[in-house]
Length: 329
Image (tube, rainbow, N blue to C red; front, side, top):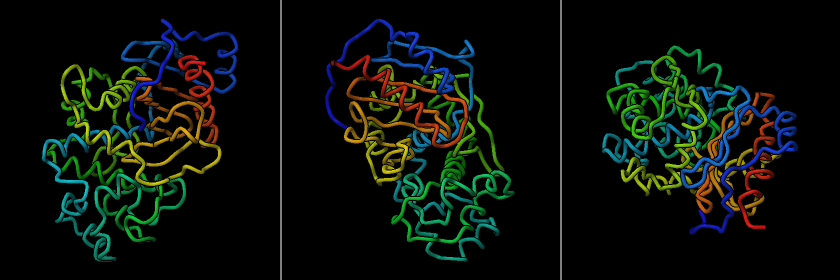
């Protein structure tokens, strides 16, 4: 991301004027939260209360932070490790899936983090609902045929996130939610949360419910390069690696609801949208956590579900209302 801070105005609050309120209603936006340097500039929720709500695939970015913490602690070795040693070696169904194609043993944690595992996973996560019903989620994911060599092609795949979640639970010797509570949520003051489970582990690709203010804390942690109130929660190196573009991802998808892809974070360079470059967590239908390091800015936008492409309306809230109010004319 671009270094340094951009000059910005510092209003006490971002105001929701009548025009913005009309647009929020028309676009079926459910909530907007913005803070700069830890100072709340705007908090609006259509329900009036900031209760935990499903963040869908924004969960993946939380999982990424937890993987980084596990690597910092040494319970996971490296992103270059094969995923296989972190799974259940006594699972016959899983062993059968691996015998199907020995190349699957070369799938690394980094391949899964960057969605480049090579596993056949039809566009826009179509096998996700089968995954949720699978009796053995690890075997289901690794039982998919290899469509590409690991590392070659980006394919959005929540199954890979589930493998990472299972691997972390096995490495940590505890549930993902407990690990998260001890090493991320409690230090940041996040809670209450809800986190669904699938067969064999916490749901890694979705399933987390959290309030807007609490989700914003993850963005602020990353803007602060992993530091929180004088304590390094996750290493600065992990943050930097996570939010750089490892693959062009879905940068050219129209409408521009996505971007390049890092370690379970989307990356949006400045030449592809109004304003500075930023990165974001994204959940289906327009659930966004935006982080803009150059403005020390974190923004959460929540939206009613209307389909994949309507997510562009949440980005328009960021790009047409929030950023212009903060940047110099």
